[in-house]
Length: 448
Image (cartoon, rainbow, N blue to C red; front, side, top):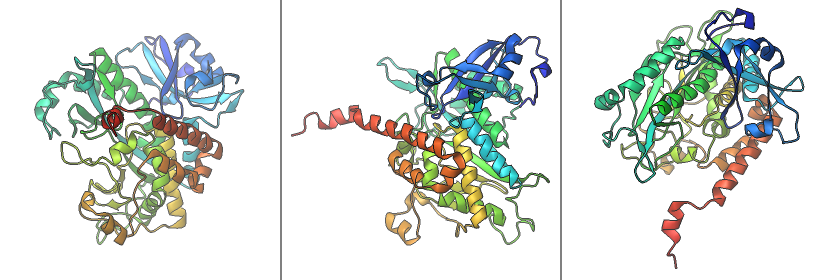
């Protein structure tokens, strides 16, 4: 990320325009395009938006302008239009910080962590489908030869999509993201890309820009890129696995690593790391409202099966070693992978909630108990009950009920924001139940 303090530091003579961008509660990006010649004014006074028209952001049609102030340190040069740059923004109304701004909320919670001496480091791994519309108008994988039941890591599929993948990797690396791998994932037409971990706010900005970048490159080829958690009932869904760790703000040491080394510590986790995991487990059901934030998210979590034979999504609130069937996986020393996070995530809200839950675990020294070993997908309800294990919510409604009762997350993210978020998502739940699906018509049309 380019660290800048003022527009005068921008020495980009060939950049003519800036996208002033922000996300609303659902994670949808909104933006205005402004000439670079007025960036100084926009940095001081902001770009004005009719907030009610910009999605769920806590405004009615009668409210004063929502003002987006760009964070110059977030600048990304648009790789396929290098005369344009992009800025993440923080929202204000009448000169005051807007309490419903996801990015502002994340900054505030991360400052709380810093005040305790912690720096929250994150790496996110988005999965996405490349699709096209078939002759019947239905969405299908863009690659017509990508038809295997178990297509994960398929070499031929990677190579057939090489033009798209290499353009994407090259674009991200020109931005200095440090892409280290891209692969064909477990579903037909599905891919994942991984770049270097960073401080949490920068990672949230990167994921937001990455969605814009991936969709734009796909559109240039007449394709559709989607991060929807479960676009196909028979295929594996889109995750956005999140690797997290806490570092000492002063020394830069990874506090998840045991000071005495890993000997006698099979998971190589410090007490702080264990307590952080304890916090994530304790708040897991409420966290789901942010990590799996849509009606569709729970069709990914609770899918009965897929063509490949596994959903690769957790069901039980568990942690363990290098085990992809648990919710919290420890793939290597010094980090924890949160596998319940999906492609619909608003990264600002999810990361704020995750660090708040982890800090509560540290403050209360919550013991996560023994790690789970084995295949969690084969656990029966009786097995889980005997072990005292809980499950993730089965629906968005269950997740919202858990969040509504979670005082720690509500206080950390702000009661006003959480109240509006619950209102927005409960409306989504009601709208879902008011709709009639094709499945219902086929099943019940001739009933009786």
